[in-house]
Length: 168
Ligand code: ADP
Ligand code: MG
Image (cartoon, rainbow, N blue to C red; front, side):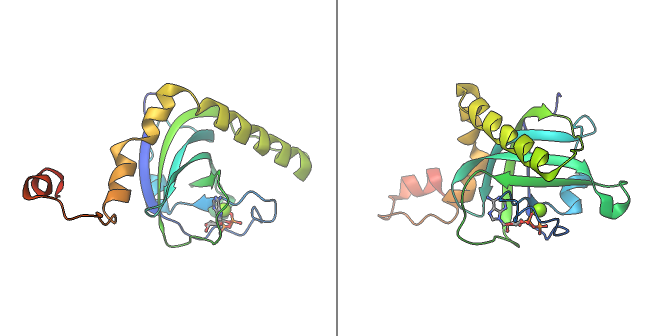
């Protein structure tokens, strides 16, 4: 896929309550505006990459891009599971992600247990792949750094020249 790595951001919206949180695998949904901007060569399936909520830290993630049954499978959905335990929900916050690589196509499962086993396998694969040095570079990308620095308060007032160099 020539569009990878693919960077995008959007507000976390409510999904259709398919109970992913009950499975222990909550997925943060992007709004249609983000989904509609996906390049044509990004196919449905499971991806791995990096994610950041608001101005928080950057964590590993797995994302499912699939056909949305709510729209009679005419519209895609993008659902991100951030591999981190959050204390609270983050609906309404800005989620930034970079999709780094593809794990597998979408498929159906005979049972909930089989689905959970597959997702946990995806999470393990994402964790391993993202350890590669070339993928770690994307974690440090300015796309994420600018999110954090915009709210950071410097411990000392920078000199004028530093202000000009860093100030934007
Ligand atoms: P919905 O159907 O509204 O998407 P989910 O059961 O999939 O409901 O839960 C998703 C929500 O859970 C996210 O929008 C977010 O606010 C919250 N959440 C908490 N922890 C995580 C996490 N590690 N990854 C993704 N979402 C999380
Ligand atoms: Mg969800």
